[in-house]
Image (cartoon, rainbow, N blue to C red; front, side, top):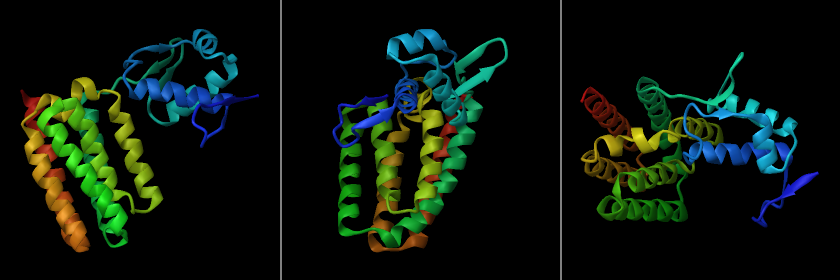
Length: 224
């Protein structure tokens, strides 16, 4: 039996896929905090499925790095240390240097317009939305810059974003160091200007500078 979604463009999901998507959403949205135990039967009863799709979904979430399974304790939402967050950000942004370099010559008038729109929304979030709103807008800007990069590269980047995304409420760089927002805004514009010129080397160099500044800000924030 399959589960019908409200989104008409994706009409059916298997019970496993539905359970996986729902648990993943709850983890990434912070509804299931790090350390929360995932009990098979209560989850199955709440979602209206049997235990088997819940067990399968938890295996997939363990693969994603979002759930930890231990003997005698079962499955829990993964606890992420500050050190692991910074390591993940550093690796992700190395991949983003590659992604921006490969994406730049593939951008079109349409994708550049989308990037411009994402930048405008980030600027608005910086002015009025607060650190968490800017964290969302920041991710959208990066996605827009890299949207024309190869699928595999973008998938790896998204996986690294998601592993860290669940703790953004307490450990977002922009929550820890709100002053970093203005620097990120300037660096985003430098990256975009290079992308718009079609200069892949300059875009990669600007993303590398953005990575260095971001990691420097993380080091300063965590030293407080």
